[in-house]
Length: 392
Image (cartoon, rainbow, N blue to C red; front, side, top):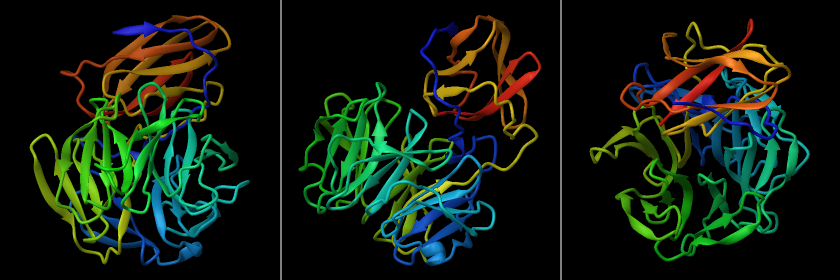
C-alpha cells in the first residue's frame, strides 16, 4: 500500500542503521562489547562468538568504565564512559583513538546513549547533581540542550513509545529503581513503572507488540509491562546474574550481556530457547553490545546527493515506515527497496510529486518481505539518495 502525506519541514537526514545487525540472508557482522572493569571494548565474531581481540585496549584515549558502544554513520565507534566527561570516538577499522566526539557540555557520569526519533543523540547521566537527559547533534557531536525537565538520578536506558513520549530507566540504588515518563517536549509526566516489581533497571525498550521490556540488573531478569498503562505483564527472561546490555540480530534473536557472569546469552523468544553465545575473551562486567557496520556490498554506500534530505521514521519498524523529504520543484520521484544482494524487491513509488514537504508510506507485505536489513533508493531525475531500512 502506498500513500502520500503532506508534512511540516523534515529533520536532516541521518543514517542510524549502522547500529542494526544484518538480515537473515547474510552473515552477521562482528559484535563489539564494552568491558567495564578493564576499561576496554572487545570484538567477537557475530556468527560464532569467537573472540577476535581487544578492539579498544584498556584505557585507550582515557576510556574509563565504559557504558555504551554504538557506531556513527561515518563508521567510527562512539564509546560512553562513566568517568569520561565527553563521549569518545575511535576509528571503526583500527580502534585508534580519534578524540572527543561530544562538545559544548561536560557530562556527569554518562551512561546509556541512543539516537532519538529527531535524529539527535540522547545521553543519560548517572550524576548526583547533573542528571538530566542531554541531547547532542549526532552528526557533529555539538551540544543541543538538556532535554528533560527534571533529572533522572542514576539514569540508564532510554526509549520512546509510538507517539514519541520518552522513557528513562532509573537504577536507583539497585533496590528502588523505576522508569520515568516524559512527553515529546521533555516535560516530566509520571513515574511510569514504580519500584517494587523492578529494583535496578538498566535497559528498557519497546517490543513489536508495543509493550515495554525492562532489563533488571539487580534481579537478573527481563520483565514485560503494558506499554500504555505500565501494568506488569510477565517475566520474559530469568536466570541471569546481572543483566545489562542488549541487541537483536535480524532473525529476531536477542543477545543479552550478563554483567555478573561475564558472558553473553542468546535467546530465541519465539521458541523459548537459550544458549551461552560468548563465554571467552576475558569479559569483565560487559554492559553494552552492538553489531558493527555491515560488510560492504555492491549497493552498500552512501551517496553525495546533498540536495535531498530524507528522514525515515520509524526505523527500525514492524509494520510501516515513512520516507519524508522536501522537493524544491515538482518532480518525478521513484522509491525502490533492495535486499542485501542488490536485488530490487519492491518498487514502492514512481509518480509525480509536487513542490514542498512530502512523504511516502511503505507498508511491506509480511508474506513477501521478511524481517531484516534492506536498502532504499530514492531517485529524483538523475540524482539518487540511498540508505538502509530495518524491518523487525
